[in-house]
Amino acid sequence: AASIIKAWQEREPALVARLERHLGQLALARSIRATQVSGAQIELRVARLPRSRGGGPRDLVNIADVGFGVSQALPVVVALLAADFSGLVYVEQPELHLHPRAQVALAGILADAAKRGVRVVAETHSSLLLLGLRTLLAEGKLDPALVKLHWFERGSDGVTKVTSGDIDQTGAWDDWPEDFADVTLDAQARYLEAAEAKLLA
Image (cartoon, rainbow, N blue to C red; front, side):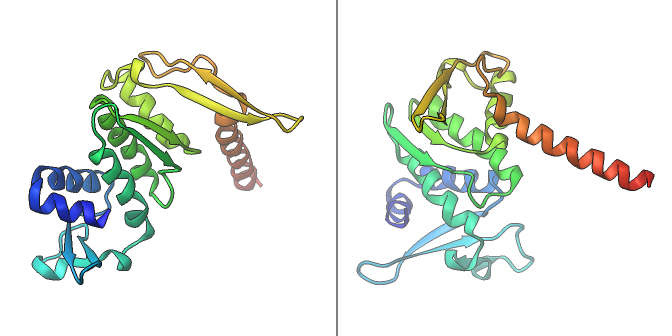
């Protein structure tokens, strides 16, 4: 990602601006700079959020000195921006190390790429990322034709079964797996029952 960002700084500043906008949407960084340190080494520095009073160069810190969320999300966002029309981007668990709010915001970044004609395959376990996509559909900001859901489930025989479901303009899937959303609902119900029992004791 570092060499791509360096090239964008020199030739395509509009892509750097879009990258910075996406990093801001994820609440990860305000700006990013790539600097050639040696022949093969490029250092990435990011401006933290929120802006410090002093601002300026002191705001830029090495990407190694910030949370894992930046280093995990940056290659995903760069790949989505670098992909051409009809290009394919495969991302595995893009939600890793991201705050729940950032997981929801990531749905918008994936949707932006899909609307530009990028074919995005995202393997995720994040119900928040899926909820973000469903919300974009319900708000009319994403065409249901651009979204397809595939569930992978290992059967008792050890064979993985793939189930595909269509999504409508309200963000509803026709074949939502029973054990995906139920886990969250069951955990919340158990917590509420335990908290209520503790309060009434």
